[in-house]
Amino acid sequence: MNRYSRAAAAALLMVGGLGSLGCVTTGKGGGSRYRNAVDPSWPDRYNHAAREAVMAPFAQQVANGHFEERTLWNWYFEPGTDRIHPAGMAKLDAISRRPNDNKLFLQYAGDLPLTPDNAATIIDQRHELTAKRAAAVRQYLATKPGAPEYDIAVHNGSMPSIYAPFAVNALRGQRAGYVGGIQGGADAGVGASLGGGNTGNVGAAGGSGGGVSPTPPAPTGVPSGAPTGTPGGTTP
Image (cartoon, rainbow, N blue to C red; front, side, top):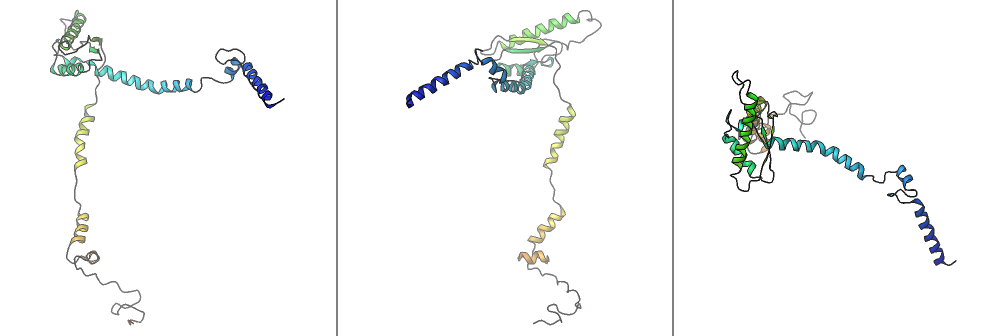
C-alpha cells in the first residue's frame, strides 16, 4: 500500500469515527451522551447569569433615579391649587429640553388639607385636583417647541430627602480645611537659619550670620582649666 492509499484509509477512519459521535445540537448518535457529560454552552450561559446578577441592582437604581428625576411633587404647585409654582416651571423647562423621554410622574394631590367640612368629599377633591394639575402640566409643556405627547402617571410615593443637620454640619465644617496658623517653633527655626546675630551652631553652619560656636565641653577626666587635645594637656 503506497502512501496515498494509507492517507485515504486514515481519512475514512477519521470520518467514520466522527460520525459515530453524532451531532451535539440534534442529539443524534452520541450527542446526548456528550451533553450529559459537559455543558456545550460553557462559559456563555454562566457569563450571562453573572452579568445579569451584577447589572440588576444598577438597573434598579437607574429606574429609581429616573422616577425621582421625572416626578412633579406637590411643592411644584401652589398649595391646594393647580397653579404651577415658579420652581415647577423651571422643572418643566428642564424636562422639555429632553423631548426623547415622554414619561412623567405626578404626585397625588395629598397636600389638600383635611377639615371637618370636607371629610366626606376629600378623596374626590384630591382626585379632581390631581387631574387638574396633570392638565396644567400638559398645557404648559405644549408651549415648548418640539414637545411630544407626554404620558403622565400618578403615584403617591414619598419625596426623597436628607437629614438637614448632615448637610448643615458639612457646610459649616468646611471652613476648618482652610484655616492655617504659624507656630512658635517654626518661627524660631526660620529665624535661626536666616538671622545675622549670634545664633549658635545654626548660624555658624550656615555661614551667613557670622555666629560664634560655643566652647565644646571638656573631655572626661581632664580638668576644666586644661587645654583640650592629646592626653597630658599638651598640643603637638
